[in-house]
Length: 123
Image (cartoon, rainbow, N blue to C red; front, side, top):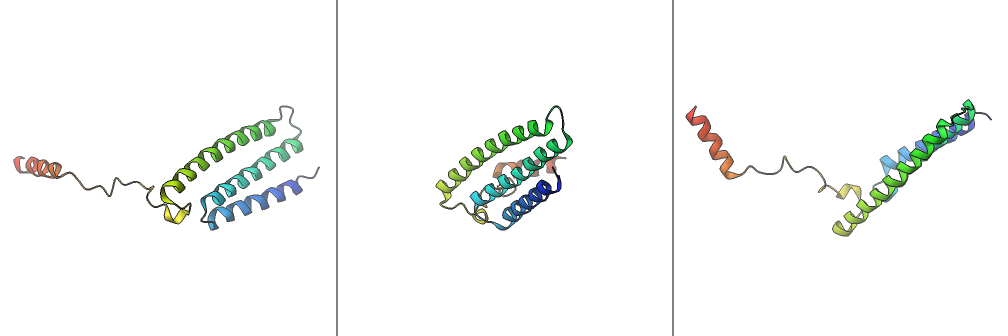
């Protein structure tokens, strides 16, 4: 078996996945692009395992592990997308600015500023 055929196909699948990840704004399509990239990696793992004729079939074992992680990722990702869609009414990535860290935006408590100024005056 020539290694070039599955490697080129995997490179094309991975490139399509990267394009979908960068160009799409729908969250479900972004998750599908990530899955496409993971499947390209799986194709490479199985192709190199067959090419090297590994007795332990490490490429196939890693492929099973990757499929398991991908299934967990898509399940958790879809659950988060459905929850966001229920609360916000949209699954658009550009509209999801409320998920960021708000620690920098929270104003200080009024009593904390007075205590800090008292400590500086006493010193």
